[in-house]
Length: 294
Image 1 (cartoon, helix red, strand yellow):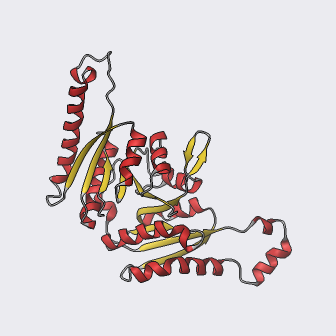
Image 2: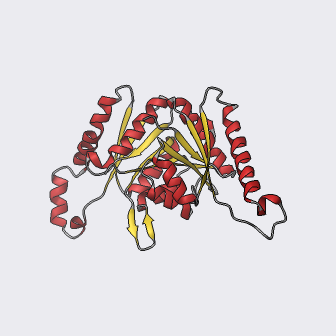
Image 3: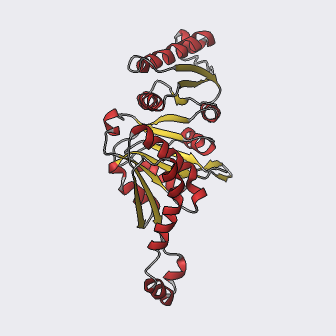
């Protein structure tokens, strides 16, 4: 089954930036674009306007707004197949369901400045934590120039090869569509044991440290994707430190940041991990959050 790229639109500046990003990506990949708006009628008695009190009028107003948003991309990309859907339901559950049928779901997110990055509200967090397909967050003000040649697809790799397979797949597919380089980043830290055992630390130093092992692990994780995408240039980046901080340190050269995600269930619902959360809040470029292949 060929999945479309799906963009969630609500008329805001950030959602229109996400729509424009999704349209460009759909053109590059030769896919259809699905534009959705999650809506449920809510009468507003205090507002003296037809759309505020009448469900049919409000629904037509929503459809007109969605059609106008779709026209903004069909005028730029004349050959692009665009499907529009007004979906009945709350935003979080509706967008999670829409993501299940999509190659990726693209959403907008407000950001104050390059240092602050995305404002990830409760809906965005619920969608990212619940979606079974990649979710891309695009900031208001995102421009096509950010996808210029020479900028990279940066992807975080951790654990065994299977742990990051889904994120690496998206990174290589995106790099292929854009003719971009993949920068694969693996971050490591010393196990707590070494903080309390100088003798163990000396043995580690004598063995050349952990970095050679980390480089080998990254190489093994990348090998199947290098074979599958032989034309993609790959930069291997291994560094000791905090995963979130190291990933953010290379966003200046990134046109897209790709991070993996395992949802964590809590008493108040699903939550994403600290690395994905930190990157989302501070990255100046679009961020793709990819669920782990279970």
